[in-house]
Amino acid sequence: MPLLQGVLADRDAWSAVGQCSIEKTMSALGTKSAMLIMREAYYGTTRFDDFAHRVGITKAAAAARLSELVDLGLMTRQPYREPGQRTRQRYRLTEMGADLFPVLVALMQWGDRWLDDRGGPVQYLHRDCGEPVTLALRCAAGHEVSSEELDLARRRPSKA
Amino acid sequence: MPLLQGVLADRDAWSAVGQCSIEKTMSALGTKSAMLIMREAYYGTTRFDDFAHRVGITKAAAAARLSELVDLGLMTRQPYREPGQRTRQRYRLTEMGADLFPVLVALMQWGDRWLDDRGGPVQYLHRDCGEPVTLALRCAAGHEVSSEELDLARRRPSKA
DNA sequence: CAGGATCCCTAAGGATACTG
DNA sequence: CAGTATCCTTAGGGATCCTG
Image 1 (tube, each protein chain N blue to C red):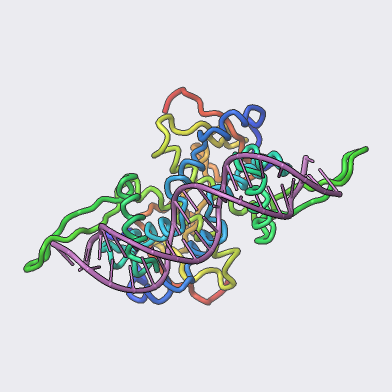
Image 2: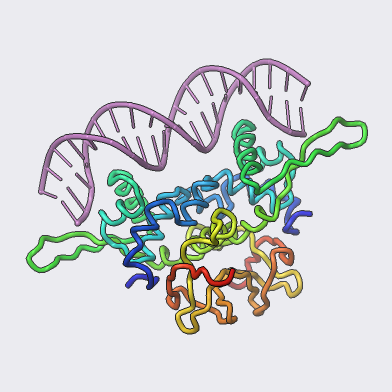
């Protein structure tokens, strides 16, 4: 009946003590506004006020969330100066931040299907062929894998 | 520079007013304990006390989170009775709940890479071939798509 | 534009005790 | 086992005002 089979027996040992990566990720940035700030970053937003306005939070909240994201390493502050203006800051995604993208896609995909009667306001298209893009599970051998075909295993220290 | 190109111009209109599916999803279940309860459900946990214990929250918190998940439709309460015992409740995933799985995988995958020096305590394997499983972006035409090859578009009402 | 400071409100969640 | 009830602490976040 469980979706996953595997190391269920000794699970209590690691799932309860903060080893779980889901827990770590949610602890680090499991707030709605952090996710929405990341969404804005993917859409190209770089300026402080734009983040605050487009996410729909106060500047105080935006400052707090952005600082956390910078401290965690998902974004960097980049000073810049327009001609005749004084120096300002831009926020840019790091590789660590860009790598969070699948999380946002997964959240959007689920919300599109289950919380929006029209299937969601926007979609992602493959630039080359124009077809809609979705997330899928794939194994290293190249097989498409469904949720029911998964085994759970402790990570083998072998290799990287 | 933005990861995504597309309907950026009129974005303010929909992203700020709660249309965004990421926002809806995070509003509905964007708490750490809700995600961890879902993780436990995938691992086969069905009993109230097991959820509370394995997620590491009090029974009060577990009751609150589980009730929300049931109300939202991700889980159902299922009465059962063991021989000689009185009726009890089990919590089971609905299709809506099972469909959240990619979100958990994405969160885990990111945490494994960026928040855990050993690459995460566990991994998912394809039951048939034993190879590790990861999430990937794919378009409807079958192409593997990278984050840089995405366009953003309003959903076309045409077709489904 | 890019914040910081202050005050207040609300939701999540721990601790503890009690019920069927 | 499956909860409910009460009390308390903390973090997120709104509102408002101020600074460089």
